[in-house]
Image (cartoon, rainbow, N blue to C red; front, side, top):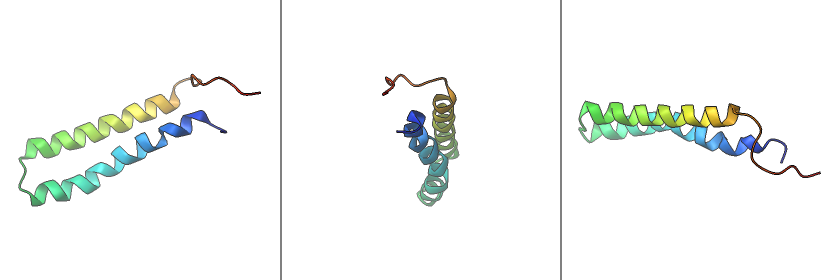
Length: 65
């Protein structure tokens, strides 16, 4: 594996896409605005956590020589 941090890529991509998928579903179900905002906040938070984990120093995996 070239870059061990690429395993965090889905953790960054999926939450970034979630608001685009969840917002139309929640609006069509007549969900209160605070739940829609909460869903967006959670997805943005997960994306930030994924970016921070990708950017952080070397992984915990042992190097294979």
